[in-house]
Length: 151
Image (cartoon, rainbow, N blue to C red; front, side, top):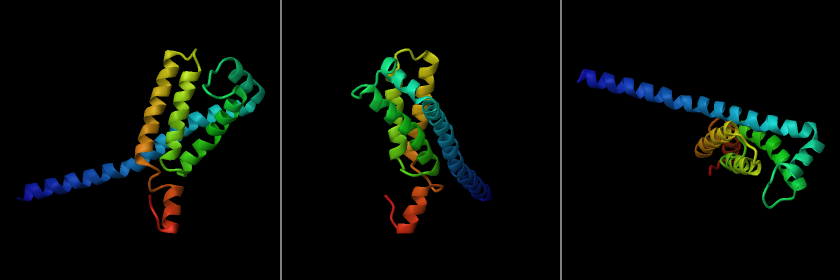
């Protein structure tokens, strides 16, 4: 009987420890994905004339004019990663970046296999963040506590 109880306590301790690593994993995923998109946005801002030219000549974004696509793309790559890291927008921001990632992958016909693999990995990371939501270490959680409401 003593061995069963000790084994069960050990199992519970390990399970609790592994549950707590979820927060570290969420932060790591957020920082990794946010870094990728934010750097791309900074590159677009660096030379916005070149960005517009690329959207006119190389990127084939469906349903949007190249100029509108350039502005929306740049906005999304700068603002959404910041919101993702601070935990504002719950599941909506990872979902928006997930859709943005798909559009980016299909809009650039010369994307290499390695580039496509990167988009797959980012997509999987965003799906995990979408499934987990903002988490305890987020602005969403702080706001929810202040107004005493949770979705």
